Image (cartoon, rainbow, N blue to C red; front, side, top):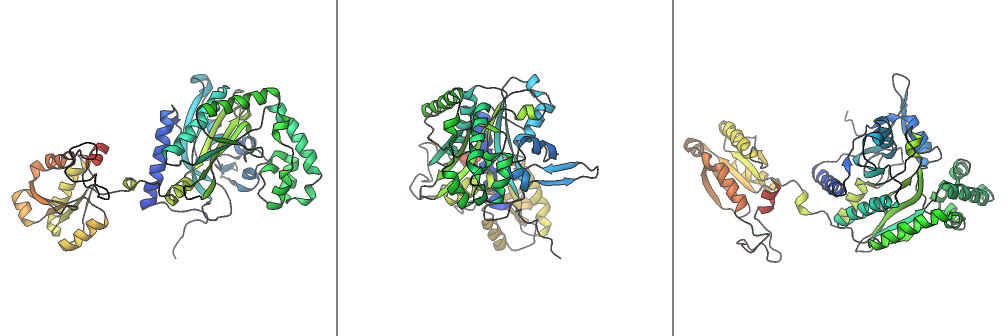
Length: 455
C-alpha cells in the first residue's frame, strides 16, 4: 500500500524548492538590512497561549487550531501563527530586560490551520514575518510597514497598494464595540451562525465576515473613524503623513480589522495587481498590538509586525514571471567515468572540484558516453569531465564546455587552476571586455563571472 501525504499538506521539491529559497532569502536579506535578527520559536506551544493572545472570538482559535493532549494530558497546539509564540519567547527569556528596545526579530517556517483545502490554501503552509516589540513610537509602525513594502518591491511587485486602518486606542475600541453591538443586534437574525457568536465575543470580528449577504449588512455599519479619540486620530494622521513622505501608496479602509484579537491602533494589508490587470487581493498583512506582551505575562509594552504567506508570494511571482532564471539549481560539472573501473578516479576528481566551491555530480552507472551526455544535458550542467583509460594512464581529464562544445585536456595537478581561470576569464557581463557577445539582444550568456562571484 502506498502511503500518501496528509490532506491539506504538499511536498516542496526540485524547482519549487528553489523558488521558495529565493523568496525567503530576499525577505531575510532585506529584514537584516532593516536590523532585524532571526528567531526560531518551536512549532509546539501550550494551547492556552493562543487562546489568551489570539482571542477566543477569532476563527483561528474557534475553528482552525490543531490541538491535542500529549501523554502527560497537557493540551498542546501546533502554532497557527508566529506572533504569540514570539511574545512568549520574549517574556520567558526576559529579553525586554536584557536587550535594548525595541526588540526586532524576523521568522520563517511552517504554521498549521485546519482549513478546507482549496487552490492555494493548505493546512500546513509557510509564513515569513517580523515583530518589533517594546517601543511606543509610531515611527516603529512605519518602519515595519516600510520593511514589508521594500520586500515586495525587491521581489519585483511594483503595483502594490497598502490598505490601512486604525482600531484606535482602548477607549476608541470600547466605544466602537458598543456601537457595533447596537447596530448588529437589530440585524443578527439575518446573519450567519458565526456572526451570532462574534456578536457576543467581539463584534469587530463581524466586519471580517466573508459571507456575501453579511457583507451587505456590514456596508452600513458604523465606521471606526467616527469613534476615535482625538489622540488616536492624531496618531493615525501622523502615521499616514510619514507614509506619504516615504512615497508608500495607501488607501484608508474603514472595514479593515484583521482576524486576530490582539491587534490595536494601526492595521494594514498589502494588495497586489499584476501588470496584466490580475487582482491578487491581500498578499500580506499585519498591525500594531498593545496588550499582547502583558497578556502572556510580560511588561506592558507594545509591538507591531506583519507576515507573508510564502506559498502565496511564490505563486504570484510565478504567475507574473518574476522568478529569475538563475535561482534554479544549475550544475557546474558532471563527471563521466567511461566504465566502472574509472569511477574511483571520478569521485576523487569530483571531490577536488567540490572542495574549491563548485557544484559537481557524477554518473554512477556504467553506460555509454552518449547517454552520459544526455544526462548532463538534463541536469543543465555547464561542463563535463571525461575520464577514460587514456586519461587515467596519463594523469589527465578531458574538460568539455557543454555550451560551446570546446574541450581540452587538463593535467590533474592543473585542474583547480584551469577551472578557476575558466570562471574568471569572462568579466564580460559587467564591463567592456566581452568576448562572447553576451550583451547582444537575445544571446544567452555562457560566461561564468556571476557563478564565480557566488562562490
